[in-house]
Amino acid sequence: MLDSSIPAYVDTRKAFLQEAKISGKVSLERMPRFQSCLISTSGSVNIELSFDVSETKQRIISGTLRAEVKVACQRCLEPLEITLTDDIRLALLKDEAEAEGLETELDPWFCEDYKLDVAPLIEEQLILCMPNVNYHQSGECAERKNYIAGQESAGSDAQSAHSESPFSILKSLKKNDLSD
Image 1 (spheres, helix red, strand yellow):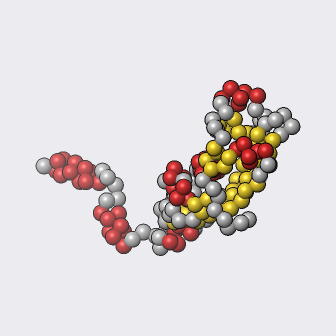
Image 2 (cartoon, rainbow, N blue to C red):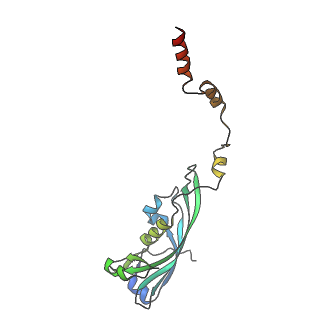
């Protein structure tokens, strides 16, 4: 994959006519909605896109994306690096009326004019392939926090000895009332 930057937009008239292929990087700075899901906004996304016309005259954008990003672990809230990969298969449509006869393996992408902004397309795909929950492997969070399962601190031992039962104080008060 090339290390070149992807253009801000693609002229769809030329891209589909020439069956263009583009590959390179898209900076995360161009994807503000996706950045809000991350703990660190440094990095970029590697993409490969092909613009083809199917036998049914459907304009198809296909390709792959790969991003290594840092998110917050849901257990310990520490940074966690994950790799996102996705296969892209989109049909470029002008309006929702065209989506009715769309093949099932294609997702619609609406573009009213000839300028296709690439960053929002990639951003949407990244948001869709993002896992719902991110966390370190089992045990890693405990090690990061120096937590040992089954051990309590010394202060909690003294506290548990004094408060064995929440009703122990009431029991002693009841005994005092009966003896008076």
